[in-house]
Length: 329
Image (cartoon, rainbow, N blue to C red; front, side, top):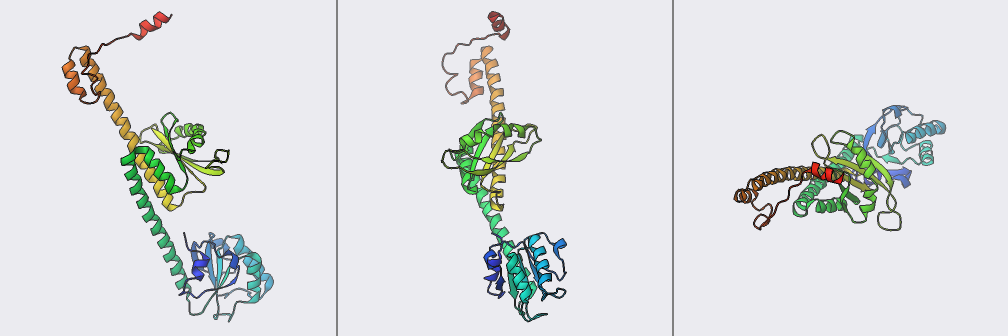
């Protein structure tokens, strides 16, 4: 989780105190930014803790403070930090009242706490959160690789569903559902075949987001969900698709897991296609040898591919497709 106003207030080195909007301290803080502009909104993106000394503000004017705070709240500013003991010995009542009215958290910053210390605390918390996400993502990748090697695509889907706290489904090149995790996701996945087919119309790699509700009837998975569809394969046409259903957009760690699953499933499907093509070529060669009466050579080439099939007496029947069509006519 990114830092919140509450976590900054609890930071023992900052000594921040809440003067208004205490019921909104759970707001995440994207950054801490100092600005003395009378209207800093054009330079804000939302989610910031704005730090001020009120150098250019009419901080004791109730109407001016209402307009100022209303603009900040409308811009999505997470909170306002006011440095006390610089231009004002305390936060003016007009600003406190305006912040309380708009529900904008207002924090008193003691004189001994420089704005830089707050910015560093926010930056450190964001970096720590990103590091945790990356570490969790690599751990998820290792687990998915382990499950894919030991249990195949089904094991990978089960592990991924657990990691994203949702459901997963695998589709083949025709758009048919191959496997799902958990089992209840089967009907939900089946209703997305048209969306999967639309995915085929786009260049590989392709992805799309599908909204909708899951199966009714009181079983697990009820309610609205968010589904991501990702194509699998590296060729001109996809070899399959992965569906990922979650209650909300995946976080950083979950995103790592999803992309790892896409890579692993792509490797699996590409390998399966290559093996299938190789088996077809061997089968064609074995058939030609059998037709030529070279049964010993056929068994040598086939190896263990067909088990004991070529060791037993066999009878071959050839049919010409044209003759069959003519017979039906």
